Image (cartoon, rainbow, N blue to C red; front, side):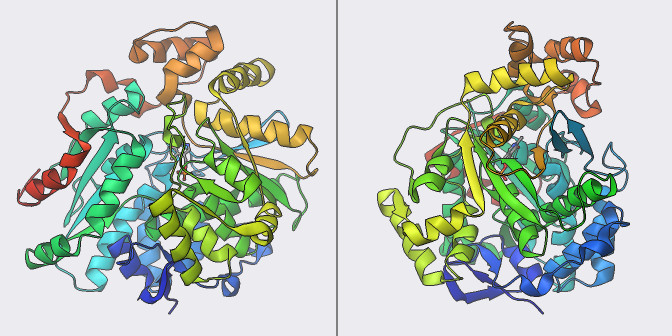
Amino acid sequence: MRIFESTRDKKCQASASLAILNGLAEDGGLYMLRDLSELKIDLNSILDLDYYQLAELILGKLLDDYTAEEIHHCVHAAYEGKFSADDITPLVKVGDVHLLELFHGPTSAFKDVALSILPHLVTTALEKHGVDDEIIILTATSGDTGKAALAGFKDVKNTKIMVFYPEEGVSAVQKRQMETQTGNNVCVASIKGNFDDAQSSVKQIFTNHELAARMKQNHQQFSSANSINVGRLMPQVVYYFKAYADLVKRGEIKLYEAVNFAVPTGNFGNILAGYLAKQMGLPVAKFICASNENNILTDFMNTGIYDRNRAFKKTLSPSMDILISSNLERYLYMLCGYDNEQVRLWMNELQEKGSYSIGKELLEKLQSEFWADCADNAKTKEIIKQCYEANHYVLDTHTAVAYAAAMKFANQQINNQKTVVLSTASPYKFVGSVYEALTGKQEADEFSLMQKLADLCGVAIPLNLAKLNELPIRHENHLAKEAIQSFVEKKLGEKQW
Ligand SMILES: *Cc1c(COP(=O)(O)O)cnc(C)c1O
């Protein structure tokens, strides 16, 4: 059985299913596998697999204390009949690049791919271990994780889910998606503060040992639906292989030819999943790490210095408005050769002075695998318009940031490999910004704009969004960030939410 260990302490260990139940390692580090080299996927053998078979193969290797039957059950329960595309994550050619559309799930965001399966991995783990604790999922969200997690965990036995989002930091559609969530085990609250405030508060609650001990007595324990949870991260590895197989089957590339992946990045989960795919044998030339005006990762990849001492900006791609990219910690752990001690030092520095530096040697290693760029709001809008005019394809604001980076990468001829751009949301989720980019017109009511955008571009509104403004609002909690913990404790005492 493969053992996950904390990025900060190798003595802090768990099997895959326990890592999923725990969410965060107890020392505050992230669970990770030490070595993925034994997990190589034979590329030739995946060409004929459908999404389900591919997911079973890959998750079977990564989460190997689940039986094949358990993984089979989780994969089918997650995806069958839940996505509007038969192949779950379709690849479409747009101009010179290929867009990997990850937004055909129940909430029209890429996070559905992982959050559709996570609840099944959690409940299966509870059964496996005979744990009769109730799992309380605590989630900080910049918008998309929240709704996708609520939809995934809604009415799932022995679980409850609580979501915190920044009041001013999400689109009107995202906000409404969360406020209208049904289910007797769900709770949603907005907070005064930004995503980093929400994420830090949640992490603090996770590592509060005194609270954990009290909960244990009441047969409750926390877990996470953020990409700090390996059950959230690993399902994202699958679609990188799927995209590659599609390129080969369509004759776009030869088997074993390397490709680039351009990823709109916030918490570094999506791009890290790609990096794991590479460790498992996927031929990747470069990962193009694309940021919005919160371009801390662009700076980091160019200088080797991660410095969060800067202003947090609200942008048109709110799901990427993040200054502390949690999953970068997992990459650092791999980059420095699984040196937990080193990772702990960097994370302490980040905590204490807001920055750390990885040095020249590691920076060079990083730059051999990653290339980073950022796009501001003006550039994002310009790209949406350009891409529509050239290809009659509407990008959402997040995907546009990655598309812009991919264009620049091609122009600068960093390499000549084919590029796949990960498309992370339906343009209808960010319809106000997208409509403005296309027409120059600003309108306040995002809900009537959806129909206008549909009329303009001829792409159907996803069903889950079409009737959103008619649904009753069920959640109206607004909190100061200092009040999160006491709110959580109060809710823990309530039988039904
Ligand atoms: C979450 C999200 C991202 C960023 O993904 P990370 O895994 O956090 O880097 C990009 N685009 C959209 C639409 C998202 O919801």
